Amino acid sequence: MAASSSTSTCSSFSLLLLLLAAATWRSGEAAAATAARALNFTRQDFPREFVFGAGTSAYQYEGATDEDGRSPSIWDTFTHAGKMPDKSTGDLGAGGYHKYKEDVKLMSDTGLEAYRFSISWSRLIPRGRGPVNPKGLEYYNSLIDELVERGIEIHVTLYHLDFPQVLEDEYHGWLSPRVIEDFTAYADVCFREFGDRVRHWTTMDEPNVLSIAAYDSGAFPPCRCSPPFGINCTAGNSTVEPYVVAHNSILAHASVAKLYRDKYQATQKGVVGMNIYSFWNYPFSSSSADIAATQRALDFMVGWILDPLVYGDYPEIMKKKAGSRIPSFTEEQYELIRGSADFIGINHYTSVYISDGSNGEKAGPRDYNADMAATFRSKFSFDVKKAKFIFEERYAEWSVCPYHAPKRSEGAAMSRAFRNGADVKGYFVWSFLDVFELLAGYHSPFGLHYVDFEDPNLPRQPKLSAHWYSKFLRGEIGINIRNTISPDEHEHADQ
Ligand SMILES: *[C@@H]1O[C@H](CO)[C@@H](O)[C@H](O)[C@H]1NC(C)=O
Ligand SMILES: *[C@@H]1O[C@H](CO)[C@@H](O)[C@H](O)[C@H]1NC(C)=O
Ligand SMILES: *[C@@H]1O[C@H](CO)[C@@H](O)[C@H](O)[C@H]1NC(C)=O
Image 1 (cartoon, rainbow, N blue to C red):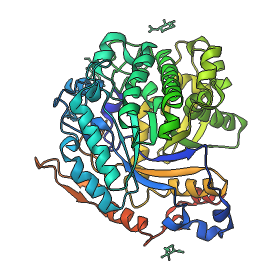
Image 2: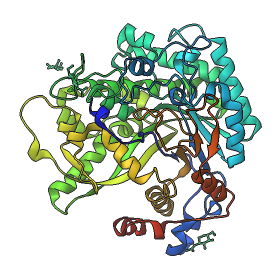
Image 3: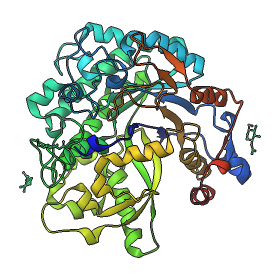
């Protein structure tokens, strides 16, 4: 698999910016500030209702994978088949299933305002549909109660890549439209049981990554791909399946959002959104081909999911390039999906330069990358078509791991967004503590808090980044973008 050859240590599941549609705050205050001050901002420069948090996900955090009635997810199957580069599994995670009380206290001590975590579908409903596991229910209820008690805002993701194996076996998971009904029924349980205390619901984490990494390159479970794309898959079809999976994801999201709006929103008063992986793209040159490729890459990466949620259909360029390989929405589906997100989460690491890749277009089968026909360039001169989905990690190491500067590109983007009047509602660091990273196992330096995986008690210890975040949240230090960005980024930040 492409991912196996990576020596990097970070995963893609990074930072979440919440852009809430129903926003109240406007950029007036920021616009009034001087340019210099806008590049050195403190907690007080953000609106009070803006939240700063950190996140984890179920499979990466909980451990206890065979305890209390949980059934395996596709990630258990993947790791137990020895598919991780270091042969690790998520059996241990960060031990969160048993240590969550201690961790919530740690969040409180860190000054965290919000916590983003995901629910394990196969822990809550071990058969995928039907009876709820009382132990699973108890765990999430108790975790949520702890967070409420400490005044930490709760952001729940319903699905973070860990599909129940039992349903994968039954109908190939996201490849089948049958997933829509089962996912909606699972969401119904979550809203019913937890919605009295949870107001922020994300249906899925990074459906665009899921579609490509699991069904085009085959690096993520269920590891489907077809030649000449991806490596060593035993089944799959890289030319069509990524489009089918994204399609079913969008429909499943919309079905869940409709359920929430019809049955719960009036009383629970929460919001439902989706989360998308992104780069920001700049043209590599001023040629019209590179400028067109830059827009095309944005449409393929972000528009693929965002356009349906906002406008009810895929970007025209995708329909043109993928032709009959990308499914169409019926009139009824168009009505269902259009406007189906109360907010959009953006997972963002960095920006890239894009040059036109259509010269490399060959006859023969075409996948998503061939349809996009764009070459991604960074300081590493990376080619997305060759690198598939290992590229995000390289970028991640570069821009996020030295956490003293996560605010570098993201901070610049946020300050710019504010000044342009964007309704940015929150910022989540990945991750609250070291967890089982989906491609790097237990060698991840991402956490604000260090976890000693060699010690059976999995003790936690704050890193410098945890201290930094605490001080920032207490208003004792500011983020000074001007000193940390490169001349190129500086120019973008000043725009
Ligand atoms: C693909 O499979 C072949 C044959 O089993 C094996 O030799 C090769 O190492 C595999 N490649 C990767 C990247 O896993
Ligand atoms: C993938 O699906 C397309 C459309 O159904 C088909 O034409 C193509 O032969 C399939 N490729 C593989 C490798 O099965
Ligand atoms: C940035 O803000 C912090 C906190 O208010 C302040 O201590 C620091 O001097 C400022 N730095 C610059 C360069 O303005």
